[in-house]
Image 1: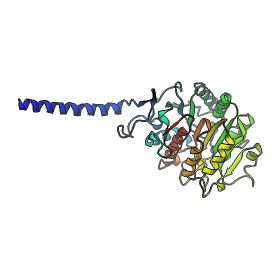
Image 2 (image 1 turned 90 degrees about the horizontal axis):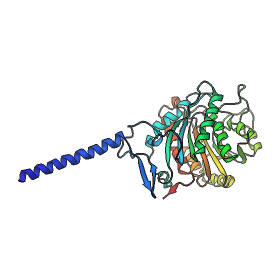
Image 3 (image 1 turned 90 degrees about the vertical axis):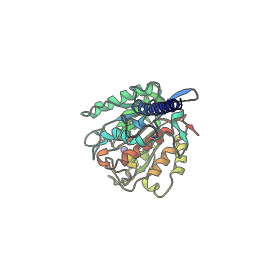
Image 4 (image 1 turned 180 degrees about the horizontal axis):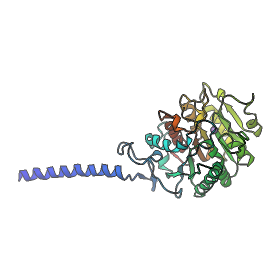
Length: 353
Ligand SMILES: [Mn+2]
C-alpha cells in the first residue's frame, strides 16, 4: 500500500514535469503573445524569460506578423531600398537587420514608464514590395502601400530604407491629414533640388514635399544638421521656407529637453510626422549608414528628441538609413530598433504607469 502511494506520487511528479516541459515547448514553437487589458486583447512581445531571444522568425520586437494594417493602432513596416543613396549602399538591408536586433526589445519603457502594448494593438506588417530596378516605380509602390495602411486608421512606424522613402510616405500622409508638421532629425537637410540630373533621391525628399505642399512649413524643425557644404550657408533654403534649423553645433554638450519644449510649442496640436535619419547620430555610435558626418548627436540626445515628442499628434514616424554592411557590430541596427520603440511609446493614446 505504501509503495503504491509512493509510485503514484512519483507518477504525478513525472506528469507535472512533462506538462511544464510541454508548456515551455509549445510556447517556443507557437507563441500566443496576446494579453488582455481593460477588456481588450493586445499583441505583446513574448518575454525572453520564456521564449529564447534567438528563436523564431525575426519580426520587429518579435511581435506577430500580419498581412495588412487592419485592426491595428500602429504597425511596423519595412521599406527596403537604397537605390536613392548617394554614397555607401546597403540601407535596403536595414529593415531586416533592425528586426534581428530588435529581439532585445522588451514590452515596457523603464525610463518613461510607457506601456505601449497595454493600449495599442501593434504588429509587424512586413515590407513594401519595392522595385529594386526603378526608384520612381518604388516611390509609387510606397505611396500606394501607405494609402492602404492609413485608410485603416493605423499609424505607420517605418523602418528604412534610404531617406527617399519619406517623400512618397508624406504624399500619402498629407492626402489623409493635409499639410503636416515635421520633426526631421538628420545630419543633412535633404532639401537638394536636382542631383546628377535626378529629382528623386535621398538628398531631395523634403524639397519635393515643400513643392507639393505636403508640409506646414512653419511647423517644420530640422535637428542635427552639420558637415561640409556647397556654400557658406547650407541651410539657407530651409530657413527661407520658414523651417526652424537647429544645427548640430547648437546641440553639442547639452540636453535637448529644453529644445523639445520649444518644438512642442512650434508644432501645436496639428498633425506631426517624425522622420529620424540614423546619421543624425555621431558615426562613433551609429557607423552603419550611407552618408556619415562627424561630431553628431549622442544616442541620449536622440532619445531626448523622441521622448520630447510625447503629447504631439504624431501621425507617422520613420527611422531611416541604417546600412548593415557598414554596421559590423549590429549596434546601428540595435540603436535603430530602440529608437523605433521610443517612437511607439510617444504615439497618441499610449498608456503610462
Ligand atoms: Mn536624411
